[in-house]
Image (tube, rainbow over all chains, first blue to last red; front, side, top):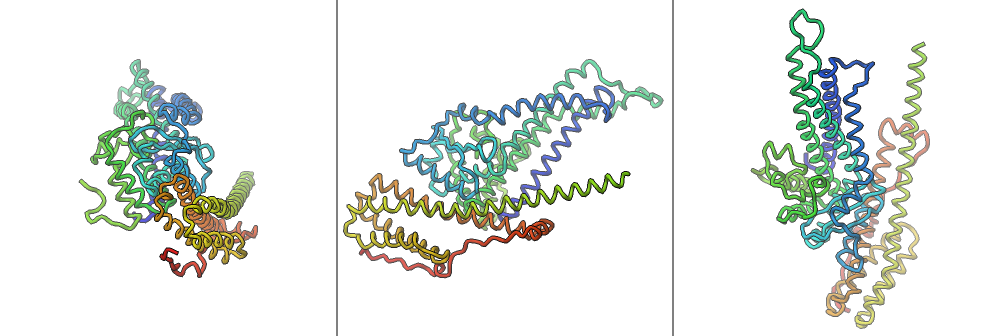
Length: 324
Length: 186
């Protein structure tokens, strides 16, 4: 996995597999809840629990999809650029250049008054996209690094990542509601376990136990899948940045600068963290490797992203990509 | 009876595929045309910015009349160029002339820190970048369009409806020769 094209193809494959797997997983959880509660799932009867949970979770998803960008912008205190300020004008020009390179219409541009260098993209899709950048990013990056970061955000917009992550969030919400509901109702009993070999009704007690464990652990598993999708989308946006700028090393340099900056972004919240190019809360988790970090962080570790970008630029590190 | 339903279903799917493939090709064709026009938009922006730049520096750089007039000439030539090949060569010479002008600005400390000159420099730098990226995107979308016409099974639709492959934007042979940069301060 080295050059731009093969990385793009590989990332796409991973996303498709993860999303398919996620849908199957949610169906399984719903089926489990229905079996345990009613003793069966039949095609005649609608899987009540799943439909209810999915609808409820979707309300949240629809709201965040349609109103999400205005909410996020307000919570971050984002302002439109002041064109008299040459640094703001330069940023606006860079966004225009990247809109041309990506073939997307010009997004709305906002600037956050914070010294921590970071950037994010939000909005429903290419025609109503929003790109936000901190003053810290404008001040720290040179022109080509700024281009690379903006190109990464435009990559998110072009790949419709905001929609993908909204769907993922709805799936996580569905599983959470299902599991929560199951724990509450199962206290008062569900289907009865089969008492003996001659008992025709009920379900085998071990099967019942497996189903119960599965449903209890499902929220954790769903979050793991969601984070995997988030990290994969970040890698793909890095590939998009290299495609638009034809300059992967510029993004590598920008990421290293961002990693070096130590202060967290003051106004960011946990809910918006995944929208940024690098974790704005500077959680320690994102920089370590090892099982917990690998599985629960929204962003891949920066040294791994830099390694992949260098490979796109045909620079190979001698010790291999992963550092201890 | 089931046989008829299955056959109708298959025919329906084939028709659906034909529609989707045709629409995909038409969409790409229009994107290619739009991308080509976008290059012209950015070129025009450069033509419009240059008189501004020349006027801003003319006073302070009275001794550089030669360089200034070269820029104006190159601009006129590029705007009047006929064929795509001629235009490419003229555009390249304009880029060269602008580059030389910006190099000379470095020698005039008043101009170097002049807010208007800095603004214009940024605008012209951005325009050069925009022209480059517009050409880059044009070639990218042409590659997509041409590939779609060549790939099976979409190629059947492409040849049935007489789609033509688009041409890439290429540097002319004249442009490929390394330009000579005149460093004498005349």
